[in-house]
Length: 60
Image (cartoon, rainbow, N blue to C red; front, side):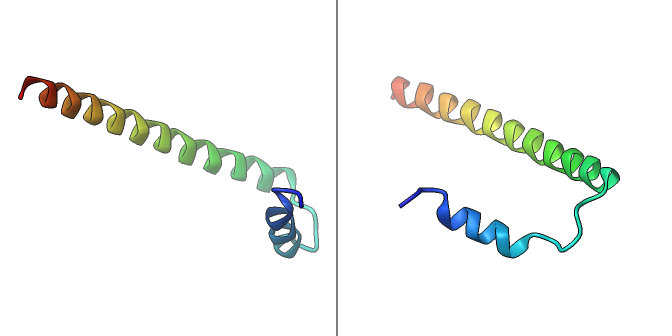
Protein backbone atom coordinates (compact mmCIF):
# COMPACT_ATOMS: atom_id res chain seq x y z
CA UNK A 1 0.00 0.00 0.00
CA UNK A 2 1.12 3.51 -0.80
CA UNK A 3 2.49 5.33 2.27
CA UNK A 4 0.58 8.48 1.35
CA UNK A 5 -2.76 6.81 0.62
CA UNK A 6 -4.32 7.88 3.93
CA UNK A 7 -3.13 11.45 3.43
CA UNK A 8 -4.57 11.51 -0.09
CA UNK A 9 -7.92 10.17 1.14
CA UNK A 10 -8.01 12.86 3.83
CA UNK A 11 -7.16 15.56 1.29
CA UNK A 12 -9.90 14.33 -1.04
CA UNK A 13 -12.47 14.56 1.77
CA UNK A 14 -11.28 18.09 2.65
CA UNK A 15 -11.22 19.37 -0.95
CA UNK A 16 -13.64 22.26 -1.43
CA UNK A 17 -16.25 22.12 -4.19
CA UNK A 18 -14.95 25.28 -5.87
CA UNK A 19 -11.29 25.81 -6.71
CA UNK A 20 -9.41 28.35 -4.62
CA UNK A 21 -9.03 31.84 -5.96
CA UNK A 22 -5.58 33.28 -6.49
CA UNK A 23 -6.05 35.49 -3.40
CA UNK A 24 -6.98 32.46 -1.29
CA UNK A 25 -3.93 30.60 -2.58
CA UNK A 26 -1.62 33.53 -1.84
CA UNK A 27 -3.11 33.81 1.67
CA UNK A 28 -2.54 30.09 2.24
CA UNK A 29 1.07 30.31 1.07
CA UNK A 30 1.67 33.26 3.41
CA UNK A 31 0.16 31.39 6.38
CA UNK A 32 2.18 28.25 5.64
CA UNK A 33 5.32 30.34 5.29
CA UNK A 34 4.71 31.99 8.69
CA UNK A 35 4.08 28.62 10.33
CA UNK A 36 7.18 27.13 8.71
CA UNK A 37 9.36 30.04 9.89
CA UNK A 38 7.95 29.73 13.41
CA UNK A 39 8.78 26.00 13.43
CA UNK A 40 12.29 26.66 12.13
CA UNK A 41 12.82 29.18 14.91
CA UNK A 42 11.55 26.72 17.50
CA UNK A 43 13.80 23.95 16.17
CA UNK A 44 16.77 26.31 16.28
CA UNK A 45 15.98 27.22 19.90
CA UNK A 46 15.61 23.56 20.87
CA UNK A 47 18.86 22.67 19.10
CA UNK A 48 20.73 25.38 21.04
CA UNK A 49 19.16 24.14 24.29
CA UNK A 50 20.20 20.55 23.58
CA UNK A 51 23.75 21.68 22.79
CA UNK A 52 23.80 23.67 26.03
CA UNK A 53 22.60 20.71 28.07
CA UNK A 54 25.07 18.37 26.38
CA UNK A 55 27.95 20.70 27.13
CA UNK A 56 26.86 21.00 30.77
CA UNK A 57 26.62 17.23 31.01
CA UNK A 58 30.18 16.88 29.76
CA UNK A 59 31.46 19.12 32.57
CA UNK A 60 29.95 17.03 35.38
